[in-house]
Length: 233
Image (cartoon, rainbow, N blue to C red; front, side, top):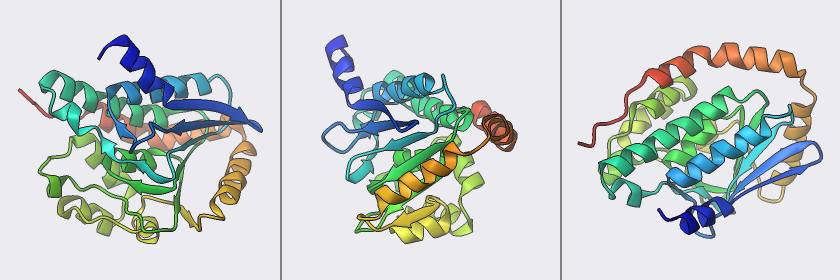
């Protein structure tokens, strides 16, 4: 990808700080299909946020958090496909390792890579509406890499885990029941809920939070790090 295109991609990841909290907004004006450049950009923004203990909210567009991985990347050849999957793995690990709380806010659909970000976060919020969340790879003829399987096994209940193979997608309240979301709110209540949760996160003791999160995620991180990527050769 040329430098101008990369810079345009990164411009779609907006980082602001408001009332003692970091806000990262993913908005490419389309469906937030996540390629290597966008995922690397997200990791870079998280690194910027890690300079203090302020909690982080990651949110997408209204109507769609993310359509998942950019399928054009998988069609572009083994090298690009592998790099895109590695970037997704790096983004998940960055969230799991982040020293401050990370809250994800989904105001629409969240397809696979978007759903993975929900599962990796410390608190995930969904919004009521005609939206679905989940992993649909079996329906579109793709095999998932191992690392989201590991993440799903750790964070989803039995119904959610079985749905990975059958490509069942979940409405917002169903997604909360199986483990993608921790909270679901009406569209006109979601901003207030995000503000409330971010306030709770600000009140945590930074050292204790980091120690407890690190201990809870240690084995999950090790398992994801050790997992191989698919061989596209």
